Structures are given as structure tokens and as C-alpha cells.
Length: 179
Image (tube, rainbow, N blue to C red; front, side, top):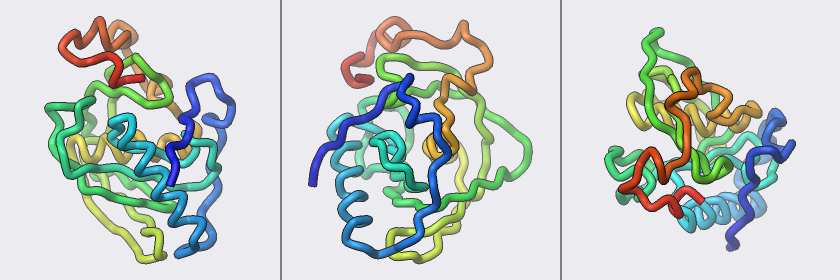
């Protein structure tokens, strides 16, 4: 297992549309998933998409069993490996919430997201996943899947008066957790 380098905003690889995963239950895929979890945990991430580490595949991971220091007030999200995801909004209601990103270190912004979603896809073994999510869980899934579409959260910010440096906006949080 290895901690991978996380690409930063400005790297053109973050703007590509990721390719579907074609082969499930391979040693290479399982190693990639392990590396992604190790990388995500090393930087206290809430999720990580394969394009963030330079892998052009439709693969995201998210969730944790413990409170995330980057989002201390957020409820837990089930630990998930999701390949070839599809998100379907349930209704048109949106919620605004603060987001950060490992590829946009040291910054936070308010981003509108669908309040309720259904997401489908596959686990690493090729077994189907079909879940309904709301709140922070739905936000995390939408944020990570955006990476597969070549979108970073600042592209979704509507009000730039609510976008800035974590250390200024949230002085109680350790800004190093956003690096």
C-alpha cells in the first residue's frame, strides 16, 4: 500500500472526464482502492476520487467510522467504494453547505447540492450498489462524483463572498487539516 500524491487545482488531469471501470475484482483494482483509502486517511479526507491521484477511472471512495477532523460536526457516512456511479436527484430541493477539497487545499466555499439523491454503481467485485442519501452523505457523494466529470467545487460556488481561506473562515479548525 502507498500514500499517493493528490493533484492540486490547476492540474489539467483534474478537468478530464474519467473513463468507466471495465474490469472488476482484479488485483490492480484492489491495490488502487487500498492506496486510495490510505491516502484519504493520511490527510483526513471525507472522500477521494481516482482522478485526484492521477488515475483516469470512474472510482470514488468516501466515508469513515470516526469523526472527521476536517468536518467535526458532520454525521458519519458509510465507508463506500463506488465504481461507475450514477447520481439521480430525488426532487429539486437543494441545500447549501461548506465544502473543502484535498485538491483545493486551504480553501472552503458554500456549494449548493441536491438535498436528496439516489446513487447507483458497483463495488470493486462488480456487485451493484443502489442507495438513497441525504444531507452530508449526499453532499459527499455529489462532490466526489463531480471529480469524475472534471469539476472541482469552486466551479459550483454561486456566491464568492462565501469562499475563502479555511484559517480565516473557520479559525477553530486547524488549517493544516485542509492541506
